[in-house]
Image 1 (cartoon, rainbow, N blue to C red):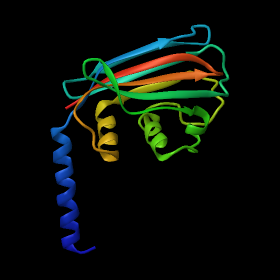
Image 2: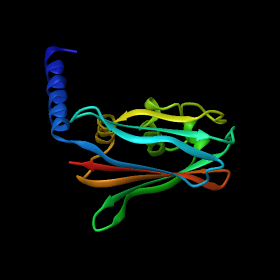
Image 3: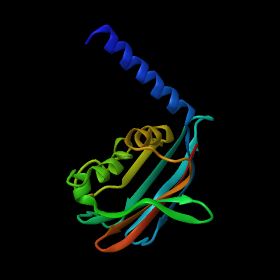
Length: 178
């Protein structure tokens, strides 16, 4: 690689970093609801602001009837605008196949949003509590802006966790993208 190519790549990287720096993604709320408290419950579910620029999400699901050998996840993204309206997806995927990487690139992308910060990193069965630990907003921003252009606004990311054909839990993350 010659000097001109290195200079060009460096310039492009600096431009991308400048664009990302002007953009901001912020977690504004998280709501975790256990729909079957005999099957699972949330030990904790919260947002924490370390400072003005660093906010992260953490949650823990306590499984009362392990092992979980079969589950599906319904994922949806809604934009807030005089109510909630669907944006680009509402899909249900087999959770065990999603984790083993046998899904579409879109599903693999959605799964990559939290795998680095959770213990949901192996295929079924799950015989332990599920933990998402300190998932930072800037990590989500980096993933989304590298995958597709995204319009500014307030969004709700909703996930329904369905085990053995019964909806067991719902997690809603409210996001502001400016």
